[in-house]
Amino acid sequence: MSRHRAVRNLDYNEELYDDDDGNVFDEMEDMSEEDRERMQAGIEAVKAALGAGAGINDQEIRESLWYYYFDEAATVAWLK
Image: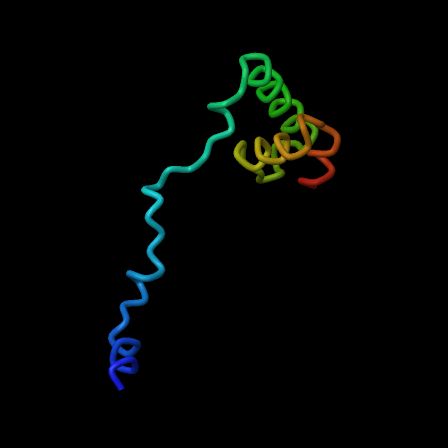
C-alpha cells in the first residue's frame, strides 16, 4: 500500500521539470566566420523571396537554412 501513497503524493511538476537552465544550443556559436556570412546572406535572400507579409521570424529562417545546408531555394520552398 505504501507505493500507492507514493504515487498519490507525487509532485508531477517536480518530476517533469526540465533543468536545462534555459541553455539552448545555438548553432551560430560553432560556425566559422564564412558560414556566419553565408547564414546572414541567406537570411536576407529568404526574407526577400518570401516578402514582408510572410510572418516568419529570423530564427525559423536560420533553422531552415541550417537544416538545408544554406540552400536558399529549399528553405523558401519549406517556409512557404
